[in-house]
Length: 179
Image 1: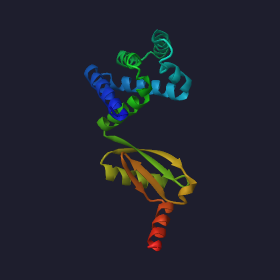
Image 2: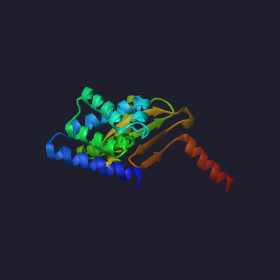
Image 3: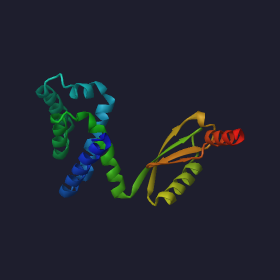
Image 4: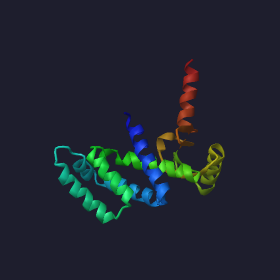
């Protein structure tokens, strides 16, 4: 089974539980927090997913962490289930899938925008409005800079990439000139 499909199935199950119990936002927050802990501490992730260590020892470590973070019961059960099935490494993917489901439910979408230089407030406003019109949803922009683009922007909205970078335009001109 593909990793994305696995993560999506677990995320859907947790999403449905959150809707049923009315604590979807808390579940999303807790799962995001756990994924962030594993991202910041890759050693912890390696320990928890190391099958050469006794599962009971890994479970004690995980339960101590879950107790300190005071996560929702659904998140606790999910994480312990992942440990029992040796799938704890999928936690970050599950959190990402659940976030996407939460955003879709709220009518929001996140756009990854890369520009050669930092965008001004006016440019950011115009870009946000254009992406909201294209998607029909409220757009939240996550910005980054990449000087190799030379100019323009590259916006990734879901699975669609809008490449308006000078680098790509120059490459297109180079291809046309070579023909």
